[in-house]
Image (cartoon, rainbow, N blue to C red; front, side, top):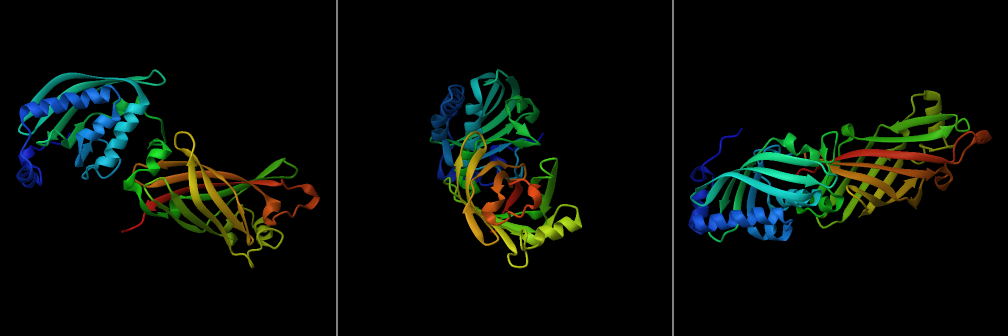
Length: 336
């Protein structure tokens, strides 16, 4: 466990004290009671009002660099998730000690999820309070495994709602596709449905932009000649004029101009495909998640009618008319 740094030892403490005097014990006690009561009652707005605009929040098990505390927007996302993921919340306070301008508290956090799952998590929390009663710093220590029953997790990914993620100002900016962590695939029935041909594209690039206000823009460019089904003769035919005609149309592109969140971390991407020089709208159902390292993963799929893009060659009707395209694309924030 990280040693608790005394308030007078923290960087910037002296400067902050000159701006605003430390809160009295009475103010600190009142702020503590109001904070935990607001969370128990699910009053997110009250919690938000109690936090200073430049609050720093550190918690054990944070997904990002543990040496860098979260700002207000990202930390509030955690509070919002916790309130929305639980039906009942109660703090069993074991001990509370005051220091100049703050307090240290040990408690057991009891909570019940929507599916009836429950936690009783032991926590140690250190909170600094400003002279105006608003919280300036939170350091929280607990065993992350104890909160697992409330989490909807897959492969180590903590799920948050897509709408919350897209409206987080901390994610605003340009994001670049990471090819070696991504995959572009396709599959199609063959031999009158008796076989299913699977393939992938091995060369692609892309980028996207999040505004932090819900809007999304992005582009994926795929080198058509990089298709690979594992059989050279078949790949040569797919590259020919019967199908992708890669000599004339070297690139396949997907342009995303918006997203409509649906449920949880899923949404409908407003997208347009360009294949063999033909552009057509093709909505994509996507799952969008923030990974442990701060990157964003988009898993999307679509049904493509081959004739819509002049890919209709079909000797004896052996090949299915509809192909399934899939992408698992990981984006990392572009260097500033």
